[in-house]
Picture 1: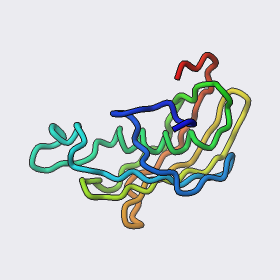
Picture 2 (picture 1 turned 90 degrees about the vertical axis):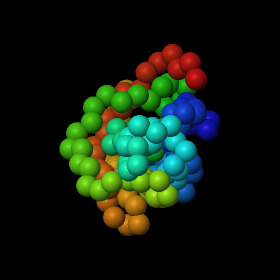
Picture 3 (picture 1 turned 45 degrees about the horizontal axis):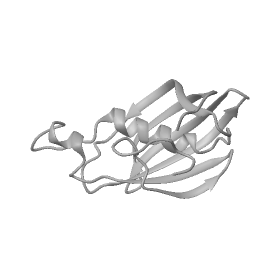
Picture 4 (picture 1 turned 180 degrees about the horizontal axis):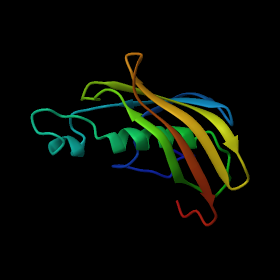
Length: 134
């Protein structure tokens, strides 16, 4: 919680299982039916929105960078692929590997899996902003 400024309802990580700062991270998101987006996406056939899967990957990847009191925000998302649906009851495993870091930016390769099956992947670039308020 100290490293991530997000809070309910936008905190999408339940646990960090492994973290090697500057190298790799593995985080967990337990997908539950009581999450507010499932009421409308889609009634009778709840599917986690792809944008939230991507945000969960971005939150996990952002943990790789030790940026002090700056704010880590999305700057660019490339090569996004959604391969399978994520539904309530799934355990979303989020892996990210750092591929670049500069003083003001960082980049990761991220994947999301359920039961060892890739559901999404992306290259995510972050900007580190001064004046963090969280």
